[in-house]
Length: 329
Image (cartoon, rainbow, N blue to C red; front, top):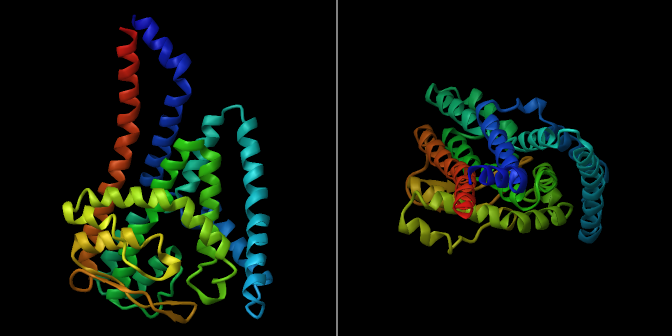
């Protein structure tokens, strides 16, 4: 009986358990030892995207021409890199190692909790300059003119939204189609971060990237919000089905930011500057404006939500193995 059980696990479900292990250790390493931002290939890819946009995005053109240029730029950047990496994955002698590497490199924002903690410490010392320097590489908004409140808001909002295209989307898309799909979605998201549609000059150029990104990340975004709402009780659950209206370019993230503001009883949102241009974003008011003291509770809230996702990676294979064992009786 035991031999039959172990044979089933190895012969029939070996690839499934291998996938769980690869995903678990990639997530664990990304949290414990994140790759420095300047060494991340996706950041280099983002710089390349910005350089290409500077050459082909012409604001004086009609909206349809800008959108067409953005679509062609997306295809030029996305398809060749994705195809080459996917091809190498297929040819690799140890595909599990390359899958692990791809997942680890796609989890670029997993280490932001550590950065957020450093930002909170800098703000407590009254060192706003250091806090701005720490935050700037992680956000697309301008940070130069941010006050302590503005820095606290930006940090908490980043904590609330980064796991949507980090932990949540990695687990979700790896479960559907493996590392190639995770890579494609993450590269698409990096293009959106490089061409932020909330900035007027990218509004039309990034319309295709933004639209596809919102559609692809809709389910991971809702599931991530669910893992936040679990910690907030019935009122938070109710908010899962009543997302507030807000700026069209950030509608994919409003739900999670709204939940964090509600659970922590603080105010988030409000006007933001992008490349010197002020953009009106509605405020999400559930209490006073945040200070540096609110960053640590936000870290704990989002870390617990990530722990919920981690627990599924551990529980699901154990449940599957239990079913196989019962089947072998």
